Length: 571
Image 1 (tube, one colour):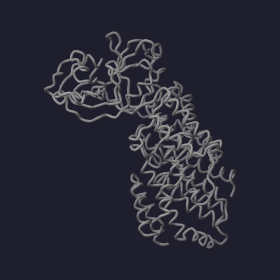
Image 2 (cartoon, helix red, strand yellow):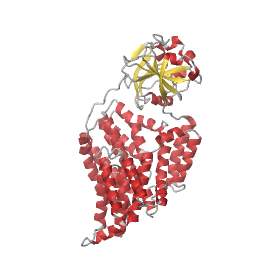
Image 3 (cartoon, one colour):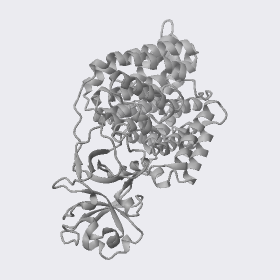
Image 4 (cartoon, one colour):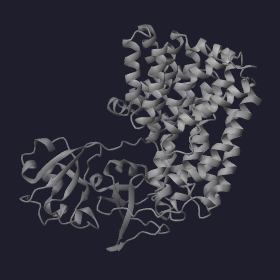
C-alpha cells in the first residue's frame, strides 16, 4: 500500500515539475504499476480499451472532419461588429453553445484569426473572454469537454451508472450565467495590447475573382476575407492599380486580383469562396499535391516571368505561392520576374517527377501537405452526420460510442478523413494520460487505500461531514488543475473523491460532479487548460492578466458550482 501511495504522490510531483510532459509522467506511472504487479494484465487492457476513453478519442477524430468545413468560419464572420458590447455578447454566446457540443480547442482555434484581424477591437479585449467562454461551455454536456468524458469513464469503471448527456447541464447553466455576468463586468480591466503586424515576407498567394462570383459587390469584411486562418489579404490589383493596405470596407469587383500572404498550407480555405480561382487553377492543376522548391542560380527562369517562361508546359507544374527573402513580391504571380533563391510552392502534375529539367532549375525542399477543406456533399455529410450523432445520443436513441464508431467509419470510407491525418492527429498523449490514470485508480483500490479513507474519517471527533468533504474534493481538484492540467486533475482526484463518498455514505454523484467541475475551473493559470495557452500567446497576455480576471471568475465559479451541485444532486 505504501509503495502505491508513493507512486501516486510522485505522479503529482512529477506533473507539477514537468508540466509540459504529462504523458511521460503518466507513462512512467503505468510502467511502474504494471512491472511491480500492483495491477493485473486484465486491468491494464481494460484501462487502455476503456469505452469512455475510446468515445473521447473517436469524438476528437470525428471533429477533425468538422474543422475542414466552412461552418465555423461562416459563423465567425457574423460575430465581429463595431459595437464592443454586441461583439462580446455574440462571441460569448456562440462560443458557449459551440463548446457544449464541439471540441472547444477547435472552436477557439477557428476564432483566433477573425479576432486578431478584426479592425474594430483590440484582440486582447476578446481573446481571454473567448477562452473562458469555451471552458464554461464545455461544462454544459457530457461531450463538452474531455474532462467530462474522463470522469464518465472513471465512474463506469468504479461501478456507477454511466452519466447521461445532459447530467451536467443544470449545474453548467448556473456557472455559465454567473461567470458570464462576472466576466462582462470585468471587461474594462482587460488589457489592450497591440497585435503584431503580419510579416509580408511570407508566401504570397495570387487569386482572381471570376465573373458571377458571390464576392462581387460585397466588402472585404462582409465576405469574411479578414477572418481566415493564417492567411492575410495584403493587396488588391485592379486594372493595373495596386490597393494596399486593403480597407475592410473595400468592395470586391469582377476580375480583381486578391493577393494573400501567409501559410501556404492553409490555401485550401480559399476554395470555400465561389468564383475565386488561384493561379494554379488557371493552369489546370489541383492543389492536393504541393511541392516546395528554391530556384537555382543557374536556372533558365532567371529574370523571366512565369508566363513568358511557359512554366506549365516546361515543368508540368504551376506556381501556387512565392516567397522572396530579399524583398517583398507584389502583384500577379504570372508577372513576377523570377530570381535566384526564390522559394516557390508548386502544384505539380503527374509528369513533374519524370521531367529531366527539374534538378537543373530547382532545389527541391519537400512536399507541402495542404490542409484539405471539404465542400459540396462531403461538407453536408460531415455537418449533418456529426450533429445527427450527437442528437441521437442526447435523446437516448443511439449510444454515443456506437454512433461515433459508425460515423468514423463513414468518414473514412467517403474520404472526408484519411488515414494519414488520423494517424497524425491521433491524441496519443491524451490516451496515455487517461489509461494510466485509470490503471492508477485500479492500483489504489487493489492496495486498500480506498478502504483506508474510511478509517481516516473515524479519527475525526464527529466525523467529516459530506458538505466539507465535497468542498475539500472540489478545492483539491481546482488547485491541481491550475498546477498541472484539467485531464490529469480529474483522473487523479476521482478515486479519492469516490473513496470519500463511499466512506461517508454520501451521494457519489455529487462527488463525481465536484471532480468534473473542479477540473474545468482553470481560469487563473494560462497553462492549466489548452485554450488558455492558445490565447495567452495570441493576445500577448501576461500572467497578471489571467490572475486579475481569472481569480474573481474562479471564486464565483466555485461558490456557484458547489451550491448548484448540492441543490441538483444532494448529499
